[in-house]
Every structure is written in C-alpha cells, then in structure tokens.
Image (tube, rainbow, N blue to C red; front, side, top):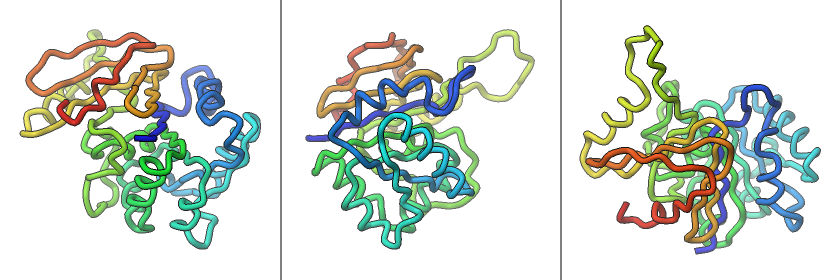
Length: 240
C-alpha cells in the first residue's frame, strides 16, 4: 500500500500561529516534489476566508494552494492533485460535503492506490479514519453515513483532553465518552491525539510525532500511553 498520511490533532497550538507547531513536519512530509496542494475547506462555513488562511501559510512553506471549493469540478481536482490537505472545523459538515461532492471514493483511491500525500488536521484527521464516531463535534448537519474515507482501520479522537481533577464540571470526560463508544460491539480502537501530537503513516508504518503523548483505547483492554516517536504500526492491521 502506497499511503502517506500526516494526521494532526490540531491546527493551532496554544502560544503559536496557524500550523506553526507542525510546519517542519509538513515540509518533511510533502517534500520538494509536491509544488501544489489541494485544500479542502468544507469543515468551515466561510470557505473563502479559510482557504486564504491555508494559502497564506503554505506559501511561507514553499507550496501553492488550490482550494477545491474554487474549482468547477471537485472530482477532477482530486484526480489531478499532487497532495491533499483537509482542514479542521465541524466534522459532520465536512463529511457531508465530501459525500455531496462525491469525493470520498476519489480521495481514497488517490491516496491508497496512487500514493499522493494526505494531510488532515482535526476534522480532516477524523474523516481520514474508518468513521467519525469519535469526533468531538456537534452533528449540525446529517451526512449519509458516519463511515469516513477509511485510510486507516481505526478511529482517532483529536484534541484529546485529560480530565482535570480540580474541575467542578460534572459532564462526561473524554475518556468516559470513548469508553461508551467501546460499549458498542465491534468497535475499533481509538487513538487519542492530544494537542501538539500527530501521526505519520508511511505504507504499513505508523509513527507518533509531535510534543505530546497519545492515549490508545482498545475495547475490553486497559488504555495505553505512547511517547512521541513511538512505533504504532500495529494499529494498521485490521485485527486491531
């Protein structure tokens, strides 16, 4: 399998600017052979403003950006793309738009068969996985299914947040919500990516990058913490 993925938990880290915390990983990932990146802004309502933000940032990194919403034929744009970046926002809005424009199958084919690099941030990371069942977002629109692009056979919870023992908030913690998901049968594992962390997938190899640890939830098992630079390739087997 040719897949190359950079799945980022968050686009902005406290104290920094847009994609600043992962800009070196972005340059390492897309390299010098990719000149133009197709940006997918569907997760936010103001697609023009969002594409400008992405375009301005990627220009500083040496890449030109074409936004899929500006093209007359989104499917053709995906078919011609050198690389894809799907930004964050509302995961339900994003997935619905991907289905509306018939891009789910096209993106899967370009990434898994043709090997073009795919970067996702937050909601863009969610839709790269097997489903959006472990997003943090409100279902403001209704996609035809929660099944996502399926570039990896597990789920990710971006912006994973540890419970604050001093908080007086009585709602469910993120951990409790993921445990509830695993109370349902046949649910895959969930990788909780804390802000500042990202997953690099190259073929059958997966590596945790960034400045923070990740937490792995597996149905019927204790959770496991992984340090940056950990080899998480075992997550890519369908048996997990």
